[in-house]
Structures are given as structure tokens and as C-alpha cells.
Length: 263
Image (cartoon, rainbow, N blue to C red; front, side):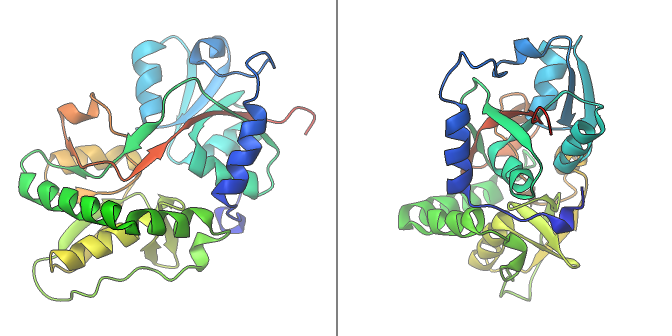
């Protein structure tokens, strides 16, 4: 599946479609990870789903892939029966025309936040104040809706920080997680990029983005090689042992996905 050919659907439309799937627990759809025993499962490496299967279901047949798009490639090729994904990213695939069944897993929403090296407490404090101001003003929801409701995030203007002088704020991102972060030509764009550029301007620092595989980001931040990362990180107790999280700026929901039967 070619990422460039994907069209992004409205979150509102997607939620309506999912609610139809979630109307009954007696429809035979998989909602609990326990139901996946004996099945071929695919997850993105480094995600909370990856961590869950390693910790709670080590005997399961799990394939780990570098990006969430690869989850669907494994489903299409028949190398996996089920994939585990998040609601927003699965929207991309649903809108792209792939016939998939999606059901909400019986798990609570997970907050998402920026991550920092544990010694970088002052920067984390400033970012928390920034998120609080955005949230209280209604601007955070405004930005979220802009990126999550558009049919094509890549068509929106790439956010650009206005501050050009001073010590750069180095932010590492995956760049492959639309609409949170995505590549538009050789520039990184998306919801989290807009948050990052606004924050850089608020603290009057120019911004520098570094792109890398999702699974490598936490070790990179832990070693202090970048100031922070906004890259779709769910806030978990296990991760908080090695890096610090900001206040949440979004909530995500877990989906169990599979190819629609007969397609």
C-alpha cells in the first residue's frame, strides 16, 4: 500500500463507522487480547501494544513492524490475522479504501504526551505551561480539529516557527504517523509539528527536527541526544521509569483490525 495515495477521512465520519461496529459484544468481533491466542498478530515495534504483548502474552505469535502502515501490509499479504492500532491512524487506512473491520478493544483511552530526558525538568515545565494555556484558551482543540478533521493533512500548510536565532530546540519525530506527524516533501508537518513550532516561538528558540524510527526515539531521549519528542507517545508507567512525560495533549483509543471477510 502506497502511503502517498492514502486519503485522510474525517475523524467524525470514522467514529460513526466504528460505533456501528461497537454496538454489541455478542457480534463475534475480537475486543480482548485474550481472544487473540493462537492467531497471527502484528503490531508496530516500540508501541504500548508491543510492550503489552511482550509482558502479558509472551507466547503469542506476534510480528513486529517498523511503521503502522506495515501492519496493514502484513494483513493484506496474509502474514497476520489481526493488527493492533490506534483510532486516528486506522482512519488513514479506512479512508484509503482498504476493506478492514475495526473494533474498539475493551481498554480505556490512553493519554498522549511529549517526552523529555529526566534531567530536562525546566523544559518540561515550560511545555506543560504552554499546553495548559492552549487548552484553557480553546486553541488546543482548534488545532486538533484542524488536523484530525481534514481529508488530507498533507495539503495543509507546513507549520513554520518564526524564531530564527538562538540555541535550537531539537525535537525528534517519527515523521510517519499522520496526521500527528508526516513528511510533506522534505519537510515534516502535522498536528504535533504545529504544537512544537508554537512552543518554540513561545520560548523564543529556533527549532530543529530530527526524523527516526519510532522504536529508537525513547532511547535517544533517554541518552539526552535531543531536547524532547512529540511523536504519538502514550503515557505509561513503564515508560515513565526512563523518561518524563508532559501533560497530555490528546487521548487515543485502541482498535483490533482485520481484513474484512470476503474482500
